[in-house]
Image 1 (cartoon, rainbow, N blue to C red):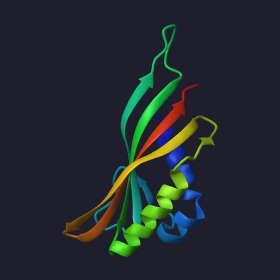
Image 2 (cartoon, helix red, strand yellow; image 1 turned 180 degrees about the vertical axis):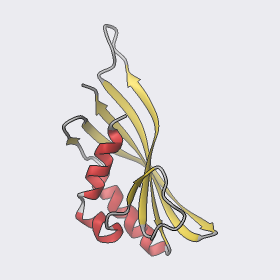
Image 3 (tube, one colour; image 1 turned 60 degrees about the horizontal axis):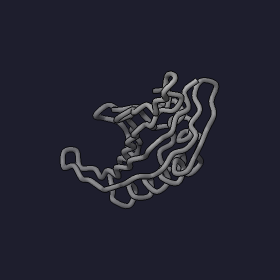
Length: 130
């Protein structure tokens, strides 16, 4: 599940995401007092693409990214930037290769305490195992 490293790399190096969230990109969760806007991301599921003769060389990974902001507009803008950065991306780092990332779905949620808007985006990743 090295995909998370690649996701962080893509998002933290994207100018549009950085313009909105700066360096506030976190795996899974952040503190309750985190400054908004920020992005959290989580690997939800990993399904190996098995072969008949050996271990899987490809994993299909379900990723969820949540864009948190104080206003609907800010959450929406950050969601658009994250989607643009990730959708149809690929990356090769020293220890992980992502062949493709595909946007699957998205929605907007609201919490009251603390009041914030969240754009929830789901992606499918094809990670090449080495």
